[in-house]
Amino acid sequence: MKHLKSLTYLAFSVSMLSACTKTDNPIPDPPPPSPTDTVVTGSLTTNKTLTADKKWILKGYVYVTNGVTLTIEPGTTVMSDVTDKGALCIERGGKIMAEGTAEKPIVFTSGKAVGSRAPGDWGGIVLLGRARTNRSSTPVIEGGLDRPYGGTDDADNSGVMKYVRIEYAGIAAFANSEINALTLGAVGSGTTLEYIQTAYANDDAYEFFGGKVNAKHLVAAYTADDDYDFDFGFTGKIQYAVALRDPAFVDPGDAGNGIESDNDGSGTAALPYTRPVLSNFTFVGPNNAPGTAANHNFNARFRRASRFAVGNTIMMGYMDAGLSQESDSTGQAFASGLSVFSNNIVHAVANPYWIPSSSGTPTIKPEILSIAGMQTLAEAAGSIVYPSAADIKLKAPFNLTAPDLTPDAGSPALTGAAYTGDFADAFFTSGTYKGAIGSTNWLNGWTRFFANGQ
Image 1: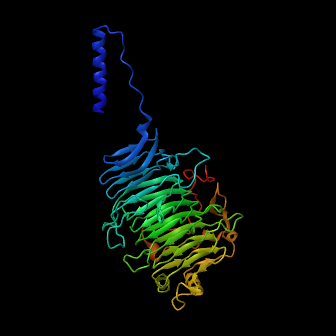
Image 2: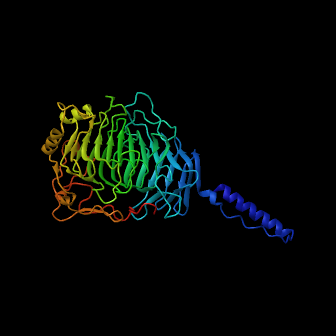
Image 3: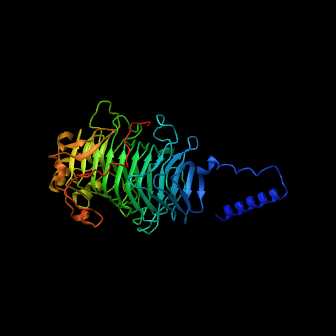
């Protein structure tokens, strides 16, 4: 502001001088702002606000450094540079304040024209915090970002993301090192994550590497790989979340799951154990629709010593299995009550409950847990298998451009939810219905469901 006043004063002074000397050459108007004023690149070392009156371009990897806050106004659109694909990384100690509204969501999307957009057009958003992981040394986030995350502050605050859409994100820096639509590395419980939608992510929709952040009202629409991926000791809570699959779209080199969860890549007993606490999810798989691509896989895949608590959830339409457990340690935790699967509605095209095998040998020793034993324990905790997705009676779960996950009259999802044990925590809002949506459809108004490319 002081700079602007100085320029104004200078222009006035020059004008007056010109008038006194009777010069016939008027002072030209200042040039309009350069379009590059909306380009964001490199490391931000001072606070910055992205305003809704411009379209902002992320050019390459953009870092919000320690002590810096990036504020994004409601209704702002942020696109990626087409050639130098963008990504936004909030480093440890940095903050993002992206608080949209239902009427004015904040949108991160491809910089390409509508009709030619594609998954992987840009990187995605990465939040890094100082909460705990189960790594013995400070890890560095994947995806070529080369930034550390983790610490000892489980209440760390990385800011607010609310009413935000993330479209066409997900690029691989190199093999097995990707940027997801929203990557969360050791993010603490002081961070607010509410009403966030990803769409057509080329890797995972949400991946949590350790941390203790909690979230409500998340949507993963049409993801290539996993919708919700947990690793490195994540122990947060999530309520009211949706996963929808596009039958024609899945990672051809991997397997797309609703949930994939590991304690770590080697299945060690490192502490804290990965143990997400998840309530009121609605998962909608391809349900063997015509043209379903190969590699659509499991609804919930817990492996490599991961633990879990899943309750009041609808699982329907996944091709290979509903609940899959894949290591002795994971199976032992479930058999002994350290993992919980309660009051869920379960349907799958092939197997509602499953333990895969390797060379014909189950990946969990039968004396620890069998498929039948898994189902017995789940049903003792109130979970029910339905032979058909239609039996669950949601209004329009398989409509890709206008999904409606509201329970229809007579749906078993309308009653039977329970909030005890892990789900008695004050974070969880109690109610009677199972799944993400009851009588009020919170998806209306701020989400966008569309065909690939739009």
